[in-house]
Length: 398
Image (cartoon, rainbow, N blue to C red):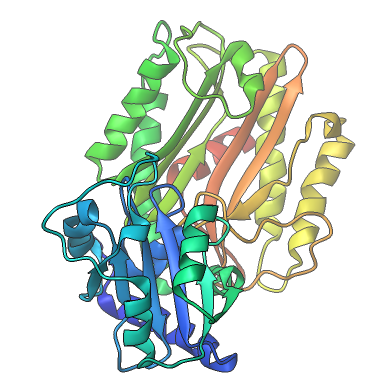
């Protein structure tokens, strides 16, 4: 199995410290929790459960970053983290309950102690914090109080910029994630799901993905018939009927990296002319974008091409949001361009096409989603399964 070497994390911290030196930042604190895990996972590989966590990075390259965790996750942190120095603090404890949990036989430290350790007790410091948008107000106020007279700035944009271009290691993780996702997704496509509830059908894909090595099912969308108009419908107790349009998305996580597939299909039978038209236009619109992307092309131009296709075919009324977004440690991350985005594609950007149409009368809603990596002259295709299904449809006359 492919794992991320410590050298990759060391390189990430080295790149972060370069940013710190540029603007005289003494401490960089990266927050993460069970849901908003991506930044903390990026710099430490740690992913808390129940509790929260932070990595404190000093500007001195000779001092290793310090991972801050809480008692219940200490052993998990030692198992997952690429960094050996771990401190237990109260502030990142369980976030689900209002009471402060009483722990015994625990050697707590404080944020102030950690900061002093990393700055050699420097009196006036500048601190950047990534994850302010994800942490609670209570935690942020505790953090600010612990930092005393320090200058505190939002560091989210720096972490996003570091994550924007995927390294060779990250690309390998994404390839493996999509390999697993294809296995889980195909298990549902190969099954006669008529008569199953949506939840039962979803369970087939989730189990197959877990069996193939997924560390987590990030989400499953499975809606049938009229429920496809829910846009992001969670699987329900609705029984799937013959000729139901199926909106099915599976997102799996491997070593922190998330792959998501979605393919529009009809349960147990030949699609009607209207259903087939919907599927064809989704696939054809995505293919226009795929054939056009390469390094140097404007991101907004791809969005315009796909939307112009919808306009020409009388489908713009059913278009809800832009047809692509970034991939990586989150299912959707930067870039998320619209028609006015002038930034250009460059090698190493990870993107998902996420082409959708919603609320077509008498047909329903659906989308196609698959992942790619931008290279100089085009794209690396991450889902062999969706790519093959798409090719089959493009070669079929309707």
